[in-house]
Amino acid sequence: MKKYLLGALGVVVGLAVGMAVNMALVTLNTMLHAPEGGVDWQDEAATKAFMASLPFLGFVVVWLAHSGQAFVGSLVGTLVSGRRSVVVGLIIGVLTLAGCVMALFMFPGPIWFGVVDVLLPVPVAWLAARLVLKKDA
Image (cartoon, rainbow, N blue to C red):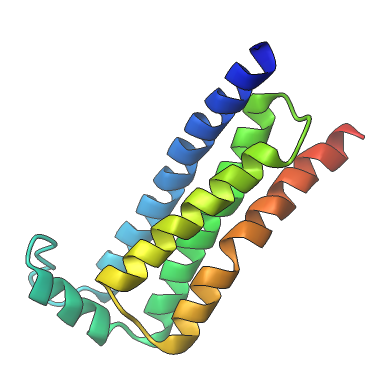
């Protein structure tokens, strides 16, 4: 029972820390690329216009935010869970992937970005969990 509680705690804490990384990078991206006067995130048209105006580097930062959430979240989650398995990290990777897919439907971007954004969260999360497990070996 303790193992499952630690696993659940690892998922929750890992997601929280990963989302903080994501939010920090997205906020940085907004500061770097926002139009004069900022973006009204409540206005769907303004948000879509902002996404359409993002340069290549802006999409790279968004991709790094999503992959950073998967990597850091998985790393922290695996550490919190007791470092016995990659399952917690993979759960965080899959949940991050679900968020990426939702974001792509809400804020479409270039095709290359969508492909990279969907393909990388799970492998990145797996890698982070394996790094924690390897450290213990």
